[in-house]
Structure formats: structure tokens, C-alpha cells
Length: 191
Image (tube, rainbow, N blue to C red; front, side, top):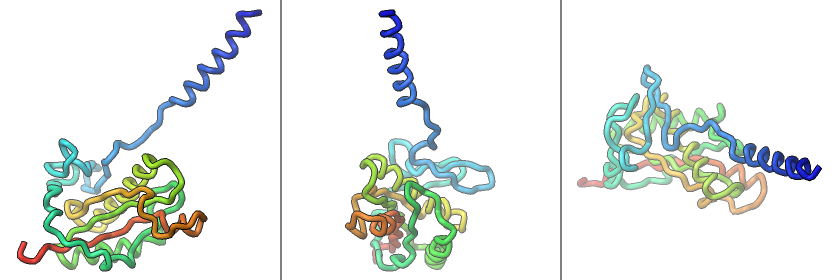
């Protein structure tokens, strides 16, 4: 009888432990599928955590230093911010026109580059929101690549919940904060 009193709590503790540490099927961090006809992947970060080198499926990837001599223009593409559903990095059909406009702007001036800033609402841990913001930015990068923009001209970053556009604590504010901002980068004159 005493043995049974010990077995049940231990079995319950084992079940809870297994459920809490179960396996999850996640995509590798920092990897975005980029269309190339071969189904390859382009890693946002190269060896040593920097952009650069040949990447499977994406050809030559831009060196992160190639973005240093660029002047950010936040206003140029501010009207084309895209928004996401709660806990999602899937681009809504209603946002495709904005992505098409961003792609057109990049195609019209080959000297420009782009930074995509992924953002989240205030709910969730900092780590979770950073990862979700990264997935959102990478989803937009992938969509722009499908529209014919060279992914080597695009860098992504995540601000998580650090840069809300609406400081409110309700669904209206949260829906505005779940977004990707597009920052057009122009070469410095004389650079």
C-alpha cells in the first residue's frame, strides 16, 4: 500500500516532466526559404553570425558591411507597413499590395537596399517576441524575393515588443504593433 502511494505521485511527476519538455518542430533560427527553383534555403546569417558568403539557394549573400554606407529613409515606405494576426508570421492576403509596392520601389532604383523591422505587441516574453519579430521580418523578405527582389539587398531585424507605435494595452493598440516596418536605404552621396 505504501508503495502505491509513492508510485502514483512519481508517475504523475514523470508525465508532467515529459509533457513540459516535449519536442517541438521548429524551423532553424535565421533561415528563410528563398525561391530558386531548387527549394534551397538562404541563411540570414553566415558563418560566425555575419551576413556573407554563398548561401544554398540564394547565391551570393550581401556582406553586412555593405549596409553601413547607406542613409535610412523611414518616410519613403512608411505607408506600406504590413500587419500580422496575433501570434502569427503569416502574411495576410490583404497585405500583398503593400509588399508589391515595396518591391516596385526597390526594383525602380537598384542602388537602394532595405531593412525590414519585425515588431510584436506587448504580450509574451521578450525572447518569444524577438523570435516572432524575426520570423515576421523573414516572411516579408521571402515574399519580396518571390516578387523578384534580390534578397542580398534586404536585411532583417527584430525589435520584439520594444518599439510600439501605440502604447495602449488593448486589441486596437496590439493590432497596430504587430507589424513589419520597411526602411529604404539610399547610398551616401560620394560613397
